[in-house]
Amino acid sequence: MNILLVEDDPRISSVVYEALSEEGHHVDALSDGRDVEEHLLAMPYNLAVLDLMVPGRDGFDILKGVRSARSSVPILVLSARDSMADVVRALDLGADDYVTKPFHLDMLLARVRSVSRRGPVSEPAMLSVSGLVLDPSRREVERDGTAISLTRHEFALLELLMRRANKVVSRRQLIEAGWGLAAEPTQNTLEFHIHSLRSKIDRRGEQSLIRTVRAMGYRFGD
Image 1 (cartoon, rainbow, N blue to C red):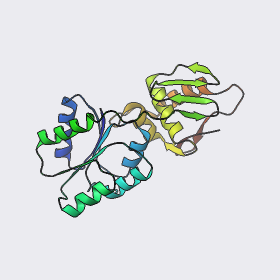
Image 2: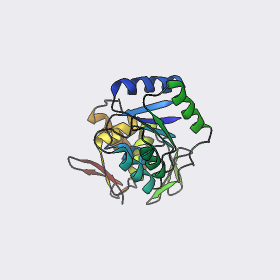
Image 3: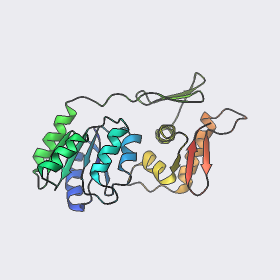
């Protein structure tokens, strides 16, 4: 599975990250809550492991935001808040499971396996803007009925831009989508891939679907 791990304690994050990776999962790790909702809504995660007390944004608020956006991604709460009131509140806000700290690693992994047995998250709907159609499940793109061949990085960038159509997407967010949270490609690398994308998806003589927003990032839309 693709798993987003949200934990600000570096020791716990490292242990859980390694254990999940050894189980064969792809894991992205965040230590701050401010970008969690955006990641879960924009990227195809199968599970989130969420600490409620990460800095930047309260975990309960993250749960509320994700479910209000009608995302069905399973969320397993991993928290030192062990009162019944906290557990009930998290479950009422849409958490799928709740594990309290301190915890046994084998038990946490068993809970993760339990989520995986429920089956994959429903396939995301196709995205369509100005005759450009992106199918996330088949990883196919076409415009006006003509197939467009994209690299893995180009597809990831385009998917994020289309999911956030008419909103500004920062360069940092695009880099994370295309290369991963720990990647450090240069701005020139991102600009090269945006230029390549434009050359493949735009109609000749028309304004590009990918607009540069000075000092901020890019915006997708006609």
